[in-house]
Image (cartoon, rainbow, N blue to C red; front, side, top):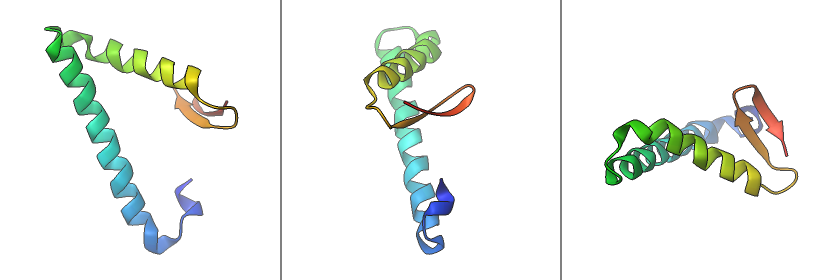
Length: 71
């Protein structure tokens, strides 16, 4: 929740999150391209997301199609 971060730090935090998301999207695209199947990008993204949720520790939050959920 960005509201839990001091207002003076919020812009920096949002920038970091945006950069991380951009890096992750580039990674999925490159994995698909390296396999010669650019059309697999969405499936690769879904596979990574499923594995991260499975490996998440109890108490960690994750976001899915229905919103934020605590593991």
